[in-house]
Image 1 (tube, rainbow, N blue to C red):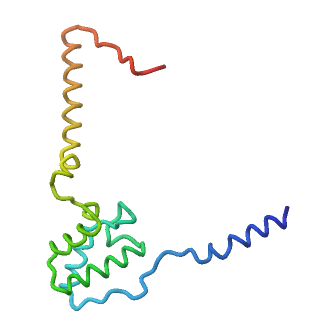
Image 2: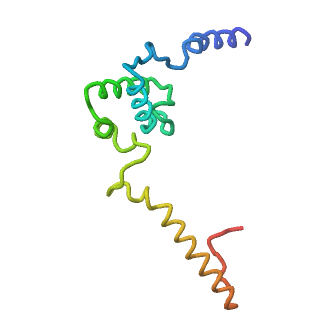
Image 3: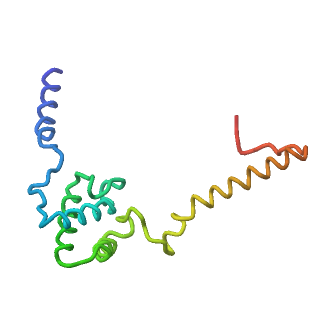
Length: 145
């Protein structure tokens, strides 16, 4: 039993040593402070396509390192911030933007919370009106006790 446990431990040990957070092999170098400020503002608005809820600036995933390099390269190629965003949207979809644009595919994302709140308000108003008029509120048959 001890030998089996030791063999299992030794088999798992090398991958555990190799499992480290991805590190950027060479840090980004900026031409000046304005370029760095523009870069930082732009990557803060973009979402890491792997991490899902981290900005490109905050993520340590390898793809985030690659995308940061790509953003800097696109900036240096003369693209505006809007063009860089559009390039990434074409490549990865609207998901890459923290603030997706209002469109046919994203209207529910923008207006869904207001619609849910409005529907909840209507339901509460109907219940309050029924109780004020003295009529009993019908029991909810969907719950099972």
